[in-house]
Image (cartoon, rainbow, N blue to C red):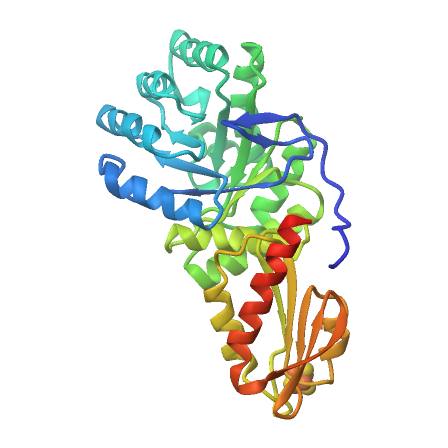
Length: 363
Ligand code: SF4
């Protein structure tokens, strides 16, 4: 029920990764990456399916060898979400996965080597309408750029990116997106800001090697939040040393917080204090788990007492305001006659949220 986001997105060119639109105002796509062995087809398919269950839009799979390329063929046949193949430099692997239906190639043209090999990959991508992602990482800049700048700077990352862009420009290929990731928030943010002014292609955002689940999520939320608030970014990945499912959840939470893309429930809950009339924290934790399957965007406020409860409930799809033994219940911003027993709060709220989600889905 909250207003639309005030963010004005940067104008960018539209590309497609499989059937997922990227850029030119398309919803910001949330990506993740498998961390299974790609040659273990069953494990990789299972992980992709679990990422799909939490709403991932695009999944990247690393394809370091020809054996992995053969496994990629089998994986691709078994999943429906678009797949990006991560290839370091071996042009033969790129050509092979293109045959097997890859939806995007993550390869830096300047790393492929000989001109005829670069051209083979670019021509193949053009023929099959496969986009390329150029990915620059502050930790692996070209030697001469490292020497020129002394340390990874935003200018260094952008110069590296533009080298690869120029190769594609020369070959008249504009179906690509670019990332300039760094593990330092300020370096990443500044690099994306500079790059955003220099090219029209979509930008894939990420703070690389951000860290563990909590610290990495905070770092990513700050870095990506700054960029997204400025309208920069068309796709994103949260890189966590954690289960990739967390990456997807955090990615959606960041978009939800900025009201850029709503998916699932946006919980509004008070931090609790001695005034609380029911167990707010236990209720929110239980409902977050129980309602993971709800994809309908909706605001649910769970507030422990009347200090802030009514104000939040008035702007929520579902709201509850703690009262003595029984709590006030709001739907669509309107106070209802019905009140909830404080000791049965979780079941009652779950039922109401599910019912409201199906009403919103039909409207
Ligand atoms: Fe405490 Fe009420 Fe504020 Fe929650 S809303 S933190 S219970 S005063």
